[in-house]
Image (cartoon, rainbow, N blue to C red; front, top):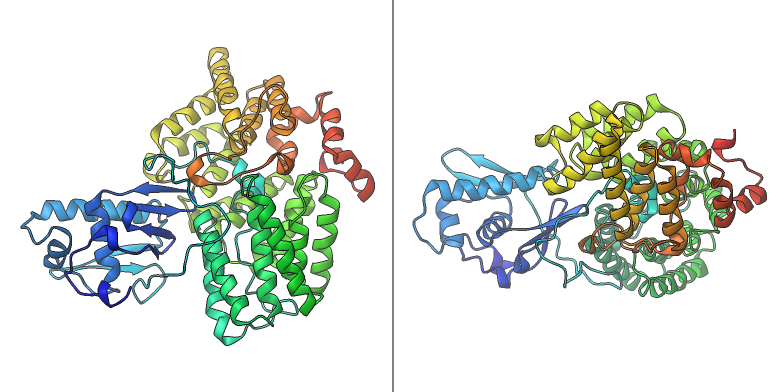
Length: 532
């Protein structure tokens, strides 16, 4: 972290400490924030000081005397005070950090910070966090919790949340040549940043890829990667920022294609610049054209799967994700999306196996955990879902108890079917739906499971057409800074098993016609799964 950061025992002045990355977390000492893909926490000053002291030691052992000198101004403190802080940091490591780093006790010597899967200790990334995509809202409450009900809808929304991740860059082949040596590390770092699936790391990736294009303007893939990242983030951004991102995506894609007319990332960027609704066939054709030349292009496989899910062809989409899973690292975005598509395709045994594998890999990631819980709930295993909810020690970290209380209300009502409980759960759904697109997607499913199809259609009318009430573009919470704008509202939610009651209702046909889905099926000469 620089020479001025490495002196053992030097006082940790949080206001002067630079932000850095620790495992899966973005550490911001000055504001005492730790930020992950699924939320953030604000640490006590002393806890942040100790974290910085351990990190700046570079994997070397830090003694208790070192800690008291750097974090307690040399004052004599009891062992309980240091133990309390270390215990808090270990909870952070196991919770929000998802085990990506840990604090090791060296008996009778001290402590050291290590990164999971590495022999060496933490080495901070000081890449600039600057770009046109939104950072966390600086006006939001710093104590705000992660998104309420970050549930199954995260999986079906696919590109609306963390879905594609960023493992598309480093697959070698015709469309992905070996990068020049002087930019290979920048590309690898950009890929790692994007894999975290949050606005801070998206911005970091864009900054890194800009450096790639500055150093190697003749490297077509550098421009293509930057273009696809701009296009990807445009779908997650608020309405006022999206046009600028789309313009940059198109400009940088053109630079790539001027060098290499077949550059895969640039071709995918042009497809991703299209609004989701009504452009499913164009996106599908673009993905298939890229895959014809690059059969293992992860981004094309993932986007094609998403597009097929949007039009009710989840069986075909699941097959694409089967291929993607064979070539990609098991990122949370891919894991939970694969679970949802397998379930929607009627491959329940495969979905159960995928959920079990995902829980073995990242058991407390919110998307994976909730996907498993809702797979149980919507497949007649409500008591098992409730058991997961009551297993407090193994819940996703950093989600408030009131969030789980709301969830308990809904699950209990679905299991019991007691009229008073059902009515209370429906009221809760309708109260939550206007607050964000993720809430509305969940509410449609909950209402169907509770037997109130009228409520499900009321939410659908608001979600897609702003009829009855308006659904906010924000997905769950402002500090998450993820948005699903009206032109990008996902239609895959309509084709899940959890919304089957809507598909047998007379109102469903007018809904799919108004959304343009009938036109797609007619022009593509395809049939949605629910009609076969």
